[in-house]
Amino acid sequence: MKNLPSAPARIVIASRESRLAMWQAEHIQSRLSALYPQTAVEILGMTTRGDQILDRPLSQIGGKGLFIKELEIAMAEGHADLAVHSLKDVPMEMPEGFALTAITARENPCDALVSNTYDSLDALPAGAVVGTSSLRREAILRARYAHLRIEPLRGNLDTRLRKLDAGQYDAIILAAAGLIRLGLKDRIRTLLTPEQSLPAPGQGALGIEIVAGRADAAAWVAPLNDVDTAHCVRAERSFSRALGGSCQLPLGAHAVLESGVLCLRGFVATPDGRQMFSSELRGDPEDDAAIGQRLAQQLRNQGADSLLAALASLAIDQ
Image (cartoon, rainbow, N blue to C red):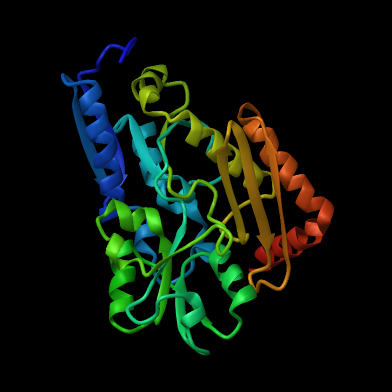
């Protein structure tokens, strides 16, 4: 690859210590090592508050930022140069002083049904227990499968699978990308199409975070950025940001490039799925963020403002 920056003596990647997080960090470690053979690329494993608090839904304990705060502290204090995240777990508003500087090529962005008994959502009988940690998935399930029992599901991927195997759930919904990355593709009973379950913004993509202003670190990871994935993810995250996207907001967004055109779909809903606003928009990939903002405005024009206000009030009351 041409015009690579000068190779540093050492690069340190901060990572959560779950098996999937470590796979992600090791994946980036491998790619950086290939780019800079003389560089010692190391991983600093850490436990975050999001990993420690497992008895309550994320929406009740502070949201997705709980998975990255400790990693950001390590970067700010100079213990690490960068952190690798599953982008669906990264807050839409980056904390001051930090920047997402590279987005890697996307794995399958879809949700996956995992069950030891049932092959599809339609096959689940009345009263069957489905586990999910996502208000987005919960809203979709409640809207279309009101006869199912939706129960919270926390923990890392292996913990969630153990809970399923122990009989606590009849089925669980997980991101396909994590299962594929850990060699667990055979656990997927069926992939849910975006029409069945619109993914979370950034689902399936990895983002590399650095301290803002670290031009050296930005240059090191720049070759890992996948332009097409970055356009899609920026549109998705812009849509979510424009609607105040957070763990308290059931929201989905998914973009693809078709013949050079960016096609973005998005929805916002109440957690019970009784109200849902959705639309789609096409445009030039270079206008990714603007497309996301315009799609958000389309939903507001449909009447989503009242839904957003009600959810915001509920979050304050809690």
